Amino acid sequence: GQQLNQSPQSMFIQEGEDVSMNCTSSSIFNTWLWYKQDPGEGPVLLIALYKAGELTSNGRLTAQFGITRKDSFLNISASIPSDVGIYFCAGPETSGSRLTFGEGTQLTVNP
Amino acid sequence: GAGVSQSPRYKVTKRGQDVALRCDPISGHVSLYWYRQALGQGPEFLTYFNYEAQQDKSGLPNDRFSAERPEGSISTLTIQRTEQRDSAMYRCASSFGPYNSPLHFGNGTRLTVT
Image (cartoon, rainbow over all chains, first blue to last red; front, top):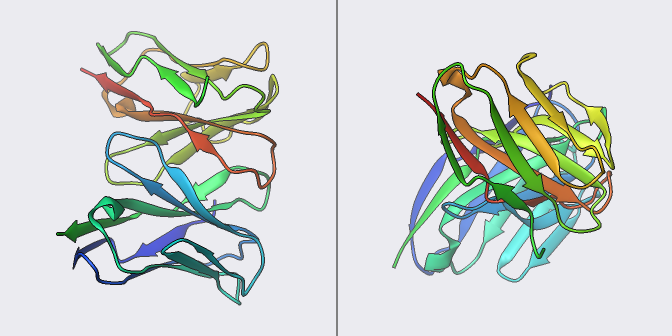
């Protein structure tokens, strides 16, 4: 199946800093999704991207669908302690609707 | 209910026993997915259903794993003759439709095989 590579694996930042993380694939994806997982809970969808080049915002979060369709970026501005968690990128396999997930970026925000 | 409900929340079983994990999706959601998540990794696809039909079971690791959704609502993931390597968090998700509909995840069942 297709694989998604996320970087960095982990980030330690101070409250108020901006954060950027990315996701790359060797295959083309037609949809990119970004999920956040809080400790002890399931992943929750943050942003969905459906078109190459698309830039979408959700509050302090901004995500972009790379023009090559092989990458996506997630930016968080003015981080706050509740941004702590694991951020996953995901995309549907070309053969159907099964979602492939990246391995996640663990974000820690120090107050 | 308001969200995807999974039970039990935790399951500890001895090697060789069978276990059944239950998922109650969001009411009205057509599609239901099972994923497995190891510590520090992203969810790994196991199988999914549209209504009661199992559409894709290619992610099931071997024939000890099976899933059903007989009435198109509640689903059960069964693992027979459990092994220690089966220990993981098993997550269920549901979506309104099969394509490009956001997945809503449950809080999972943490399975430990001793």
